[in-house]
Length: 133
Image 1 (cartoon, rainbow, N blue to C red):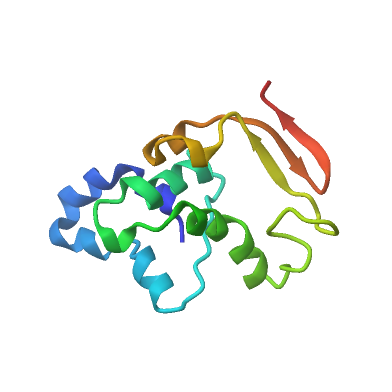
Image 2: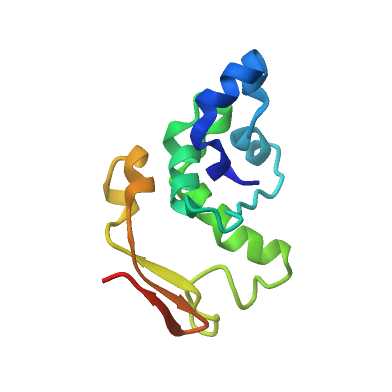
């Protein structure tokens, strides 16, 4: 699923009316024991915008999940679903070391502001890939 497509939910609501409640029921999915994996399709908004929406900006409770659940949906869950959970999806010894270093800790700011965090560096398989410093 791609919560970053929901950044313009107000526009969807104009067209969908009450059916807007059917979009992205992340809480219901997790509560039913279904694996939830997020992606961002290389959109300009990226995963941090998706996390902010899923955690704080979704208009209905059945669309909101915790920050821990949202991060897992972008990291560990997709790796597991793709059969790569033993080498991707978390930072640990023996893993491929794919991660981003953020300018702020998302656990210490208002959840609605997570989408405004900048990435300082990105690492792919243990090599610095991008630097925004």
